[in-house]
Image 1: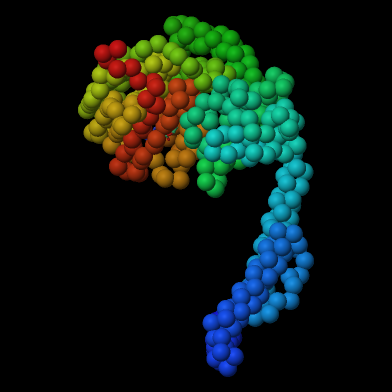
Image 2 (image 1 turned 180 degrees about the horizontal axis):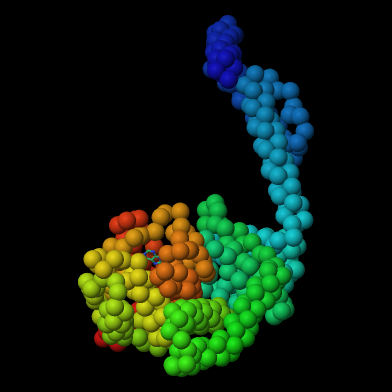
Length: 431
Ligand code: ADP
């Protein structure tokens, strides 16, 4: 381009010099220079016209062969145009491949813009959510999938886990929906039919509930006879020890059955929307007294009530969760240790933290500790008399209240279990 410009300038200079010389020779320098300039401008106007014509009408065709700087301009524009076209074709091919592969997917995919409006969706999403291509593109997804759980999920903006809802087309089917944010505020909504998994899960829940229920009556009979044998003078002293042990095990079994039934109930209950206003301060004071009355465990149980806020929820369940945490702290801390119960605000959240200076939990066990019957050390659980279901109950109660359990523990130093409730669950003392 530099060279062409130089040549164009030289050409212009020569034309000017030649016209001045010829003008001087003919005796009309100004007129000859004017004619030469007109011819020069006329030539440029002509190529400008050809350029405009080529750009507006036949850009796809090879540009005309133009002399000098015009040849260069045509050539550069044509190169840009071809490069752009190749890029567009590549992107179009990519989009086509993406659409074809997602169209073939059994799972639904919906592309949403930053306003939550549908930009595109595949066939499976149309089938699962009942979307129709023409009329639903451009609509807000929240207006089309109106399940309250899904709307809450969208508004909360925490998309680490999927949300399960009944299918909008058929109550018998279950869908799992997960939002995957990407790009500049855009989101991909993935939709899976999880009916089979849901039914299996339902069967498992029903089986556990029914089995526990069925075991309860025979166990009551056995416990009754053991009680009678215990009080019967005809039973020899040799039998005292075994009968005491049988009664202990029967009690343990009824504890497990009661916990299993409670878990089944919590699982089927789903998330709780409202609830009563719970005076947590009074509840914690009561739990502290009960913990001290257990007899073994530390005597130093501190209660730190740092907020007046009360909690909206189901009192019986909250009692069960909090007392499980406090009783565990007592159970897994030596008598010389300390337990602290703290009720406080952390930012917008309301928290209950139960800390102890007990045996602690090795890091690798923490992610699985809330699973039912999960044991860090099975011998230890039995000797401590736990059912192995306490933390599973805590987790479900918290889930039902929209809260989370945080566990922080160091073996040999102690543990802190923190229940973190969202601000919507807090009721200010003044209210
Ligand atoms: P359990 O009724 O046996 O205590 P949980 O579900 O309450 O069952 O607890 C599961 C396991 O977590 C326990 O067996 C114990 O190993 C461990 N654990 C719970 N709380 C504590 C704690 N405060 N300190 C140490 N280990 C604990």
